Length: 322
Image 1 (cartoon, rainbow, N blue to C red):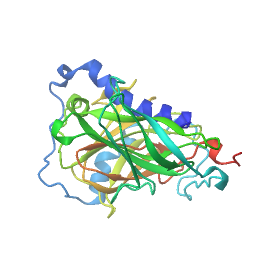
Image 2 (cartoon, helix red, strand yellow):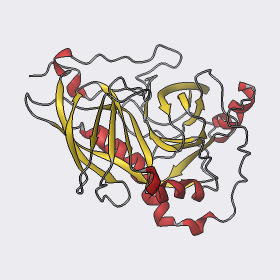
Image 3 (cartoon, rainbow, N blue to C red):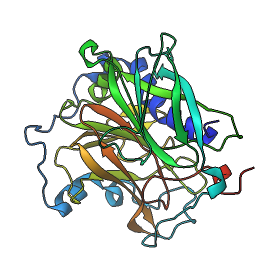
């Protein structure tokens, strides 16, 4: 089975983004922040300038970030885990592609798997869903980070490309298939969150969403995120927002108890999302995640304290498998 904590965390991230926006409705979108100019998709400014605009914890939080933070010493080496080789096998994979808002099956969807965990070049395997949203016929590695991409016919404009990075399928018994649910975001839903936050989406850029977790894999309150490109630069147009009780909030300056964050209008390519906190009265980086951002898509990648690439394994992968 797909590891429960992964399924729950991904569902928490995306369902909160989508369902909350639908409940509030577009009527809540009057007024708000002025949009930043989007005509210069690759512009960057001095790191210190953009960093101080986005990472404001010293002014807005003013105290140490809450949560279980003792498992990582800021400035130290990132946590590294090694799965047991006996758990890393290839198994048949099957599952349902569902729309996150309605939970309805998505028919005629294409599932592309990238077993190197990098969305680049040709996929390693492909499946298509039937009229019930069910797909099978591919094989995938267990206890190994992979990325997958879900899409439908672009001419129909029914869904947005939905990408999940660092997905780890748990070990299965010999001969058993990996059985899981894959996520798809409708085009209408894709537009609601930015609209609710008063932000115009640039179709030449992408959206990244995730949840921040502490040592105990509980949501962290009081962290902020910022996105770098492959050159280490910060895009001028990035818009980072946070949530309160799973609802998008224009005025929330850092993660609340739900740990949810979203970064909008990020130029495509290899990016790193940094997570910053206040520890011992000092502003410090405490986590990161790396992913391949695709324009005009929603990309899901969570972060855990002490991990620098967004890859953290379920416990069952770290000890010998039968």
